[in-house]
Length: 428
Image (cartoon, rainbow, N blue to C red; front, side):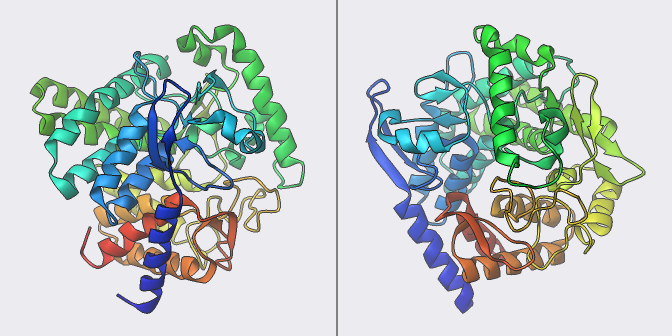
């Protein structure tokens, strides 16, 4: 291991230890024990963050990785819904709660919205590292119900693709690809955040009469969005779920069901979202499914699917990822292509996903590149990821031109660099 890798590993371990939250919640008297994204900025438990934290924790202590998932599953509801945030001690975090842009609560301690279902991939990785089938059997029931909830509630047109009802559900809160539907001016200015907050409140007001009937909300067409990244993660999760069902010893027909659904989602992405002329995938906006042609990293995200058409995978890499005018910047992979008007690598808008590089994106696309025979490109991304963390610390995101750290300090999922370093050394 090189010197910069050793320094980054030490910092990542420090963050995973320092961000741990433990206690007894006023919500049902439940004990919580998890790694928060950032103690000062994001003190709650987020759905996809915890899945990423669990993967990073495998390189510290696999038992802590299991605990991360167990704590998260306490938020699972009887109907299958799992919230994107659990506010374990809301009263203790009133100041921090006010600093998070408007959120839609289903209960005083959890939100009414979802996040990408990374959890199935995380549990499969835990099993691959520990061979603990009992753990899989323990956490599989709520995860299985959640994937069935997504199909029942968030695929109203039955095309295989799940729909989001607000930007936060993708985890990409202020991505400029949502600007038109959210009524936000495309240029990155100081007004972006206030416009976003007003638009989010507009969504919540529209949804308020339907709180007891969430399946009706996508049909309102206030914000109905089939997101390429979310659906790529959904397809990957279904594939992982099929393997987890087999590990748990459940009926083979269930594994077949989830495999078939994974195939259907991937097929829908390739037939409905692929733009043959541009060589990218576009999100589908609104009930009319209008292609949202703002070039962001999500246009490349089906690379994470091993069964993606190899020709399409090659075009994504050669024409876009390796394009220095789009994504191949000194510290890739920027969240928005450099040629887009809204590209904001320096975080001028003071909101997220408008240009900077995020480590969870690099992590997902690293494994996708390896699956499609582009290990050379994947290795370069790891080298640059390690370099920017070594330079700027464990930050929320980074300027893709300079590697300068931006956003929250000691940010949890940036510790996914542990998995990248291990993979490059043959240890993951």
